[in-house]
Image (tube, rainbow over all chains, first blue to last red; front, side):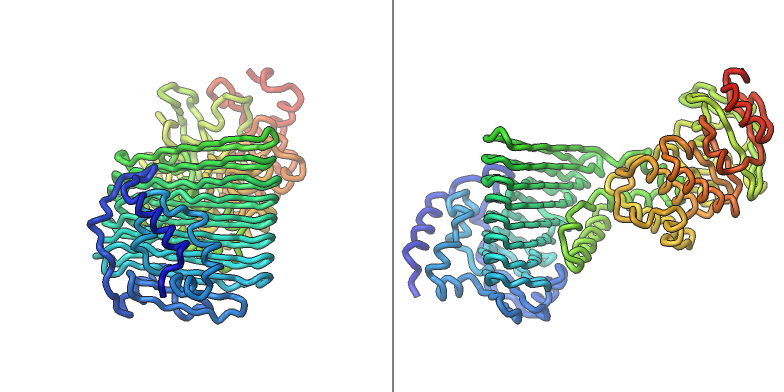
Length: 397
Length: 228
């Protein structure tokens, strides 16, 4: 079936941006990454398991490279599609939701995703449907190359859902991952989204995410980078309307010579909207982590930014760049930031409690990565986040 | 038996205390009274082997073993525990996680200990974000969890309300059932709840006066300056 004309227009915009560098982060030569080849089922299962995604789930989407796709939903009121299937089956709906929050000409990475991207999921939770069990997704690079899936989550009015997405790469693969994500949280709906990245030391990662939260909606996001990566740059943007709330927490581990530049932007465009953006970065080896956080308030609303960096090596580097902009005099915006190594008095305090040096450091690092996001998550998601925190601590040490 | 034998303590290279001697066994409660800044906390930190606080003369002996050269961890592992006056912030560490880690080492039941000092409701709270009274109770819980032979209790009665103080006192009594206690305090309010075995007043870097309950009564009546 021929592409709809609106999609052709998207591609035309993308073509004009193919040389447009990203605003932040190191540049990557996209031309060296070919489209990924076929992947076998055993390899896919093994990498999916690494991020806790199994086809035994009630609803799931698994994609390996650009050639292997499995997805289904056993949950009434929840639809899971591969994006190409969604575009074919729901042309008008697709036009309303694709490339609306992430412009195809935002930079060369969105451009390449619009032109060469294959796959990605569409998860649609119907109006009023409240789903307790998580909807799982795994996007994996098994053989290497470019993977640019386009993911859309639509949580309709009054609906509630929990979505986990794991993005992972096989240890020997060399890949570029450009995940486009557009999430719509409709009026009084709730979306709790957990994303875990488990890359390798050769992987380049450039996710591009937009989130739109309608009146009274709630968006909770937990992002964790739990393994090595060569370069990672992302800056999701969340738009909040009247009374909408967002709590976004990112916990990022820098290992080896990784260059990481992350940050979330919240646009408070509704009266009574609220956003809390929390980032924790642990930099080990000679890694470099930059944390950006932006809150813009156009209406009477509240925003808070918290960036904390932990230096675990003399060669590591952490930078925090919080930015608050108020365009309404009833807005209240605050931020706090800190960077440092583990405090010696805290280590000795714990040793005075009978812990060894290693146990003391481990407990302090665990404390560092433990945030208040737990209180916004259901029990099962909380346990999942705790397991991610344990992984980060193990790898940080 | 825990013994300080003619101990001198220096902080940052400056001698703060000299000739400090005491001994105590299980069940003993030894009060060290003194005004602010006299070096009471420094003595406890030096005994615990914390960096910056040095025992420059004399001996610290636990069950016949001189603790000189032992690290902070080794002293704790041998049965010395310190309840800090002001614990460090421990960014993000939850009360439950802290107690569980200690109990993993000693085999204690974190839930039972929490119950003893009424902190069950604080398990998910950050250690560094507690009120004064809550912090004292959590600090005491960590020492109970250590199951020490000697517990060094730094200002258990500062910055706490009456209710918290009675809970702290109850916890200290429980602790004294299995350990000797050295309790330092500048206000001695805790002594209303917990009778001393022996009391010494630290002033001018030395034990100025020692005795029993009558020393506490004297301090309450006349203050520390009369003893100087």
